[in-house]
Picture 1 (spheres, rainbow, N blue to C red):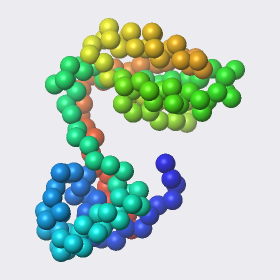
Picture 2 (cartoon, helix red, strand yellow):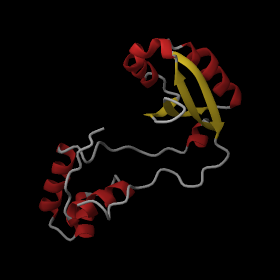
Picture 3 (tube, helix red, strand yellow):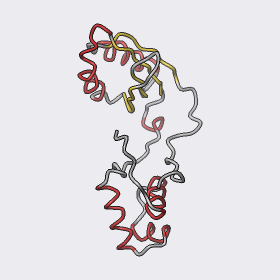
Picture 4 (cartoon, rainbow, N blue to C red):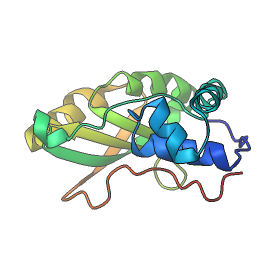
Length: 161
């Protein structure tokens, strides 16, 4: 993640916001939203992609509809005696499909994970049989998500510029 912000004008801000709300919007629909011609709009979207502002496009899937009824936030602490292995741990974490998000964090824990599983037993098996078996993992602390209040939302664009 780069710490360098890229300057976006009002048209780019509107395009990014519109694409966050509907990644399947056609170029003509986007052009109408931002009040540009379709060719200008397409050039801008491609430039946003090339500059890394837009990382990609994806479908947001309702996890319970595909049998993943449990979501948990799992804080992970690394074994301090293996501190030289920290960066080697990260690719290991990225390999698990159960981990849908992973962040390094400050404070009491080293990583915060968002994990999905079919049920509580599946979550327990993942944590015990897979995650805690990764060399360098000292401990985990799990918080089961009871209810999703605000799902993944578009990033605010009013400050960008």
